[in-house]
Length: 159
Length: 130
Image (cartoon, rainbow over all chains, first blue to last red; front, top):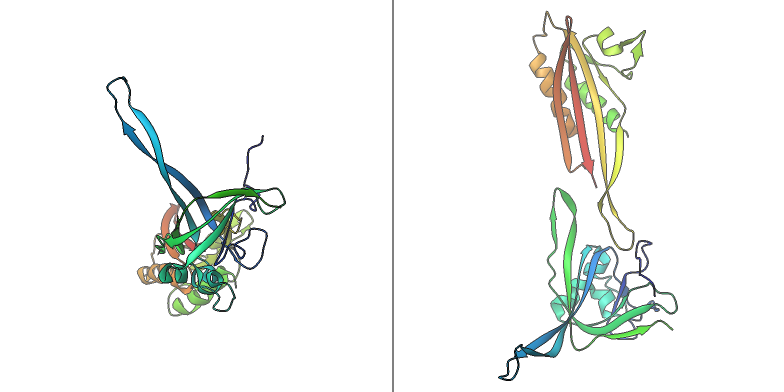
């Protein structure tokens, strides 16, 4: 048992790609999203509650989860608009291109970095919620990003 | 180029036809007296004071840093016989803040202090960039 401290700067990482292979956290073909300010992985199950005449309290059952990754990033021009030249669609079109084109994006969200044995969650979904903003008090572009996960998270360790 | 140099170059031109001039020297003390009170009607610019602070922290340590630079200018004149063009001089010194380009904040504030028969104008320039 141990806490996961991300203060070294290499633990909380997010890799994106247009295929599960390209999004591999141990690979180099996808996009490692730079300059994340924060990241939240939501695995929120729904709840159905019901009452019965023979019980003094409500009963509950969970319903399928809503899975979502939300984060805020400082806008990096290559990551946001794409490099224009890559075999991977996420790298070439960037976050904005994937959002606009509704490209399915595969992800590996690392909790402990990229070393062997490190834990991560994977899955796929669609980018939404881009809202770049800037002002003179904080004169660099920042944007929220949401990955609406299609299906379930899978957790694994890096081989 | 230090902001002090930029400000001096701007003030050399802006104050050329006024009753004051700009000194190239730093406002050090000579025999216990600041140069700007010893040599009145000369604007003295201090060195840049620079601080870097974290504007946005990121998980991969590629933090966005903010640079704050302050420069202080001094001008002392005879309090008994105030300069006829002091308003123009003060306005020119305040406006010289715009000579430093590429900043998100270009500010300059002025305060005065009278000691015996000398009035000292102190100008605090504040520049912020990211």
